Length: 137
Image (cartoon, rainbow, N blue to C red; front, side, top):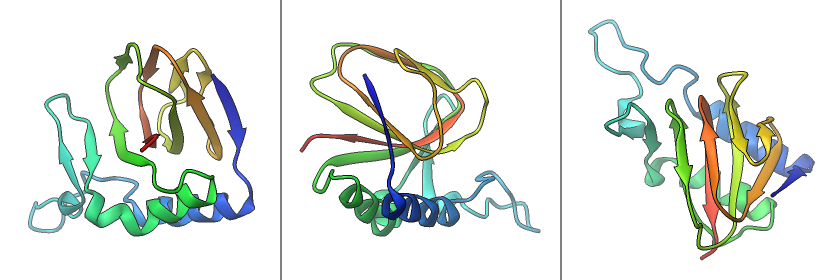
């Protein structure tokens, strides 16, 4: 496990992604419809997985700026804890929004904006966190 501070270029790209994503994804319009529902799919636990066709123009440049060009990725807003066991390789977690002050991984500790966490092995992640999860191609 290691943490890496993002450089100025990567922080700029992370900010562009953060500015694009809604701070309140469940916000409704005057007719009671979700304003941002077209951006994501909700899983059975209430976690949001953002659609790649919508976020790709923001995530690909971010990944390139941190040396992860061509890596596979997903972007989630996690409301629930999860456990990964026996990861096949390194997973890089780039927080976009740390929604809860208790958002953390074990190993690793509390997440911070602008800090990429690389984990190779089993890990538990405590919510609430919006982040890019990148794995090798």
